[in-house]
Image (cartoon, rainbow, N blue to C red; front, side, top):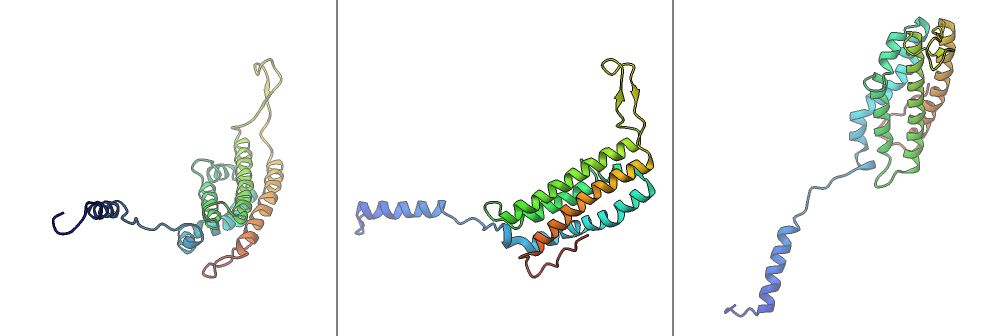
Length: 191
């Protein structure tokens, strides 16, 4: 203080030095559209694989009546379809910044319809394997008869009806995605 600084100047200098220590800038974090190319690099292959699974693998299972494989693929916790739909959710979120955009909301709605398809197919596969058959008659479930599992033709009809709903949802997801997508990212093909 003896070199010509007043108390007021010294305290202002000290306050700005302390403020400078606490105001160290943190690394910038981008989200939403700013990270779409990186997000696509991470999740794009699984988003595109959703179409391949629906058009190829699923239809193959329906034709062959492979309920065990359908059950495995559509398992809500560890099935491959869960992985695909999670990637679709995350890709849809990349069209939003701080708040969900109308585009993200519409795409997530389509993903939710695909999740309903997954749950329905999982249930049909379990019934086809005889795991989720209902008991009718009896008193409080005692003495009742189990319903027979669906025949191959009945299961096929149910699976194809579910597929038609999933096809509409997936195609809508693609149309919404392709409008205003980044030019570095290829269009999603519809079913």
